[in-house]
Structure formats: C-alpha cells, structure tokens
Image (cartoon, rainbow, N blue to C red; front, side):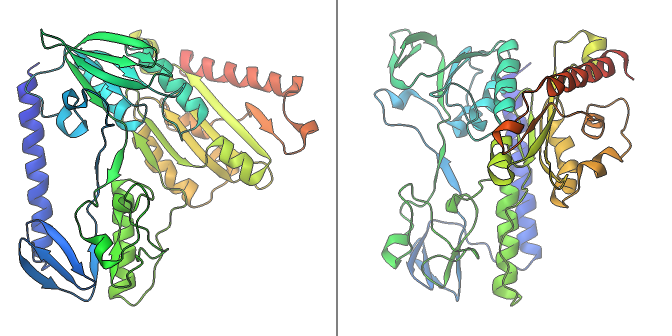
Length: 407
C-alpha cells in the first residue's frame, strides 16, 4: 500500500468531479465567476472589486470544520487536512464522536494506523438510535479502535521528538503522530457582508430562513449546510430544487424533510431512515420494535467476526413502518432502497408480503415476524411480560438459525 498513491487518486477524482460540475453549469448556460464574493446590498454582490446585480441572491457556501480554541490547537488537523497529509499517521487521536470522527477512525484503522477516539459523551453518534450507537461502538472496538469516553480535550503538547500528547479531563495520552479534531462544522458565513445588509443569523453563524429558504431580506435566499437544517449534500440538492420551483416556476415549494435517509460510512457502516425509537414513542405512543443481531452468511463461512444489526419501528395502531435502521456491511446501499418504502408510508404487512432475496442481509427486513418488544403508552401494557420475553428469544433463535444454516 502506498499512501501517496491514495492521495494522488483522491486528488484526481476531485478534479474529475469538479470538471463535471463545471460542465453541467456551462451546458445549462450558467456563467461561473470565480473569486471572493461579498454581499454589499440586497441585490448586489462584490467579487474581487467588480459588482454584479441580480433580482435574487442565493447563499450556498456550506460549512467548515471547527477546532476548539485550546492550548496547542495549532498542532491539530481537521477533516479537510486529514486526507492531504504527506504520510500516513502511525498513531492518531481523533477528538469527536460524530459521523466524521467515526468515518476517519474507520479509514485510518483500515490502513493499519493505531487509532484512539476521544468523546465527551458516554457513547458515539449522539442523535442516532440508541441501539445503533451501542452496536457500532462495540464493532469498532472489536476492530482495534480504542475509545476514550467522557473525556474533554484540554491541551495539545508537542514534544522535542515531534510527537504529540493530548491532555484531557481524565489525564494525558502520549505518542501521537497526529491529532485530528472532528468536533463539528460551522456555517461558512464569516466576512460575507450578511450582517451589514440585515440577514439574520443564529449564534453559530447559520443563516435563518423560512420554510421556503428565504432569509430576513426578501431578495436573499439560502440553502444547504449554511442554514444548519439537515446537513447532507442530497438535502441541499433537494432544497435547491424546491427553491428553483419557488423563484422561477411560480410554484412555491417547501423542502420536504420527512423520512430523509442518511448514512454514516463508518466500519461497519450505518444506514437509517425515519424515526428513532425514542422519537416514535414520543410521537405515536404505542410502537412495536423488531430487531435482529446476527452474523451474515459471508462471515460465518469465512470465519470473520462481523455482525449485522437491523431494526424496524412500527406504529402499533396503524402498522405503518416509522423507522428503519441498520449497521453492517452495505447498510447505506440497502437502506436507500428501503427508504422508498418508508417514504411511501408502507406498512409492516407490506414488508411481510415482500419476498426476500436469499442469501442476503437485506432479506431480514422482510422476514422479521416477531417483535423484540412492544412499547405501550399505558404503563400496565409496557412489554416486560413473560410472553414478550419468549417472543424475543424466539426472534433471536429465528435469526441465528438463518445465519448459521442459510435457511
């Protein structure tokens, strides 16, 4: 393996994609002006001293990595710099427990770096389903990634030999070749002139918009991560499409944030769509939860320890599938397909009547017959009864038999 080859291939792919995007703009008749832009009034943008006027202005500048201001932070790298390093890290500390931290932990662990992840919480991926959080943490630990939980970074110290130490609220860990901060991103709104023209922003610099992506200045609009709604590239595309209809097709359109699928490209990866269990209980009260935790066929045959976790959350009253979650190989690919079903409002009966593709992990979503637990809004009905416990064990037996025998 050659690190320099990986970086060169990455740069070549970025250049190829940039070229494609520029061609799309050109073919659509869009004039591309490259430079530093600044909004000077509700209808005018200054680009390196030249003024451009328009009926509407759209801000879509995205976000940038955020590194906390602690002593020695100048020695840290962020996610932008992590894949531009001249050499592969030997031992890296990754500070943060979100999707960027986990994705880079998986990358460097896969490249045989020693990886330590420092998080302030007890578990990774705050805002994700609790069982998914537990499962991915366990699986990444089994692959050799060391997690330091409930630790906050306080300082970075550089030794005479060039190695780095990370001081946290619980002590100091030494000997790192690199320390990377994946502690979130901030909207990229500095020095854009937005405050001057009266565009309202939140404390963290995100542009405030209404349901149609319009800012407090009627002629200025904003989409994407700069608005800090759902910070995903396809969501920004959806917001842009809705905005185009609103402005140019005289068809006011709100972006639809219901059942947006998402993925974390960790090792193993995660895919999800719809509500988490906690959200579903809060919104619907009575829910049935189906789970499966098993070794997929390729793991049993090859002897790998890899496991898959899958979860369906179903409204007990309507049988509608409210949430679908998976952690395991190919989870993002699998969940993209099932997202259509969840978005369309299909029921558990629709899932059950769909024939599975065998032998796949995906078929588990259409062969889950027994709820792992039933949650009811009335305390007397909450499922800790012996009957439900039996159902749980039967469900596990079903999954273990399928995984072991390929039935």
